[in-house]
Figure 1 (tube, rainbow, N blue to C red):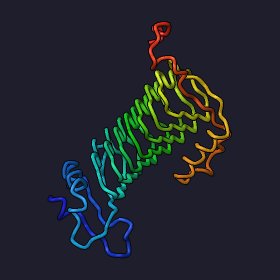
Figure 2 (cartoon, helix red, strand yellow; figure 1 turned 90 degrees about the vertical axis):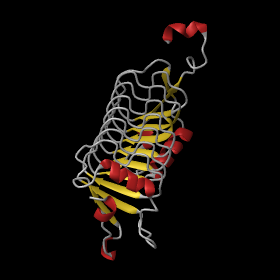
Figure 3 (cartoon, rainbow, N blue to C red; figure 1 turned 120 degrees about the vertical axis):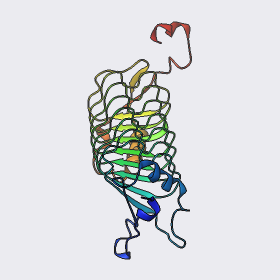
Figure 4 (tube, one colour; figure 1 turned 180 degrees about the horizontal axis):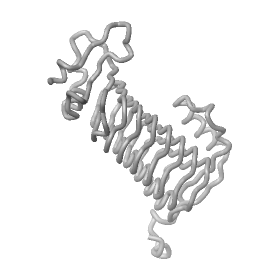
Length: 250
């Protein structure tokens, strides 16, 4: 079925979701093409900016490459690389997400109400990703400016080669946290199994508490946790300016 004929414009009683797209009867390719064509895909005169996606059933690459100020609510679990390369869009996932959620994201918001798998926010340059549950290993790998907030715990090798942005974890962190870290800001409220090469704990001063509070407040999370209970981690700056005395640490 052509997605333009399948999408439904609801009556004014439900303006929050002006469009509904069912992946039982449309392909992910059709969905993403529709999203890429926004706002040209909307009827003339329409100001609808919200869509609901039904029956994702763990398929991959849902809402990848979106470049539009639109809200996309996905009713269920998604597979690999959902929201990849996102720009401007707000993507709400009422389920869990597979590998590479928000990979190379540039701006916008992704909110997962369940858990996230490996490589959450990998290489992402901007925007915010929120996970209500836990995230698996390599969370924030090579992050380049994105803000990631995980309300649960994260797995090993997280923030590996993280260059910029903020990673805030309400729970615990796995082994080799922040290995080969550059200048990303890392905040953890729970325990850290072990630190990676060149990652150290740093003083949590008032300026850092204020910065973290501002990040949480921006997403309406300021009242959920006490920023005074977080510890801060960062780079010892002994690896990324190569020195022969540090060769053994590479």
